[in-house]
Image (cartoon, rainbow, N blue to C red):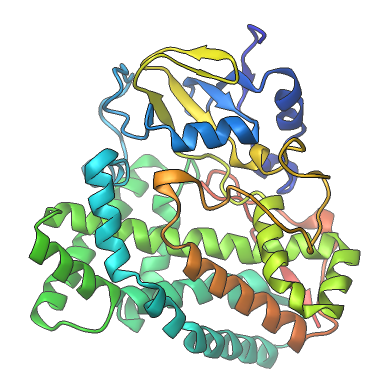
Length: 401
């Protein structure tokens, strides 16, 4: 390990590709010090084996108020609602296990599979509208953003007329420097007030949706306060939109960049399942993962991390690690098995992974079947990538067919 401190390497600055520094760090300093976008110095973990260790080991907590850490800023400018949401999301141990059980009872495999026909209908309808407007069309606006927004809103129970406002709030609360802190705090506050009102409506008039199921589970078990229930709902809504929307748009760019793999997928549509898994492995989606704190002294990759020190993992780097993936630097739609970490690992494995897989397989299958000539309508080099967000995706994606 060297004593130098690198700036945190962002995929947004490299047209959605992993920064070259990540591959260098995996070989030179797989556990190294970096300066995060907010100025804090943290350990950056870049190898697949080490990232899995941190994800699975309760020694590394996402509860930044624990672990013996001395935080430089106890007041977050994004507001108290943000703080409550982060505390809810950062639960560990038994409280976290109970929270997962509560959500799992509401977000069942049966509920997700029952949505498959609706997701197909929504995809077809959005593409019908795109066709009617004619080419070129921006696939971000026409499909990648609206589809997951409609799906997650219908799943949770957000009325149709209020979904655009929800999308705007979601864009603001997932900001990492894109918007001013007071704008982000306002979005959190207004989003929370809206969800509080919606919870009251669902209590008076229960429906067959996820929010009603969460309310019933919460009221029967008394595991969450109303404030925590609001925060959990916001996290589900925003998470269900942002990551899937970016996976669609950035995933399609990845296919355009690898014409041989796109041609193979068209010729062998049965590869779609493995292709989506490979897109999740190969294409960076989340730039900056949740910070963790060591609750005691621990070794990762032979490096001693002291209690209270912050740790940042790089899923992007882990997913390209050639010690874990044969030919890891190659994009291969037939890759199997594929032990990528896009959905996490261990106790915090993404509860929405099944829904995301249904959405992604539906979208890519439909696009390739419906548009044999689908292509990007501008040079790839002209695409701009979103900066200042938790996720990494193209601002626009003009396509023709």
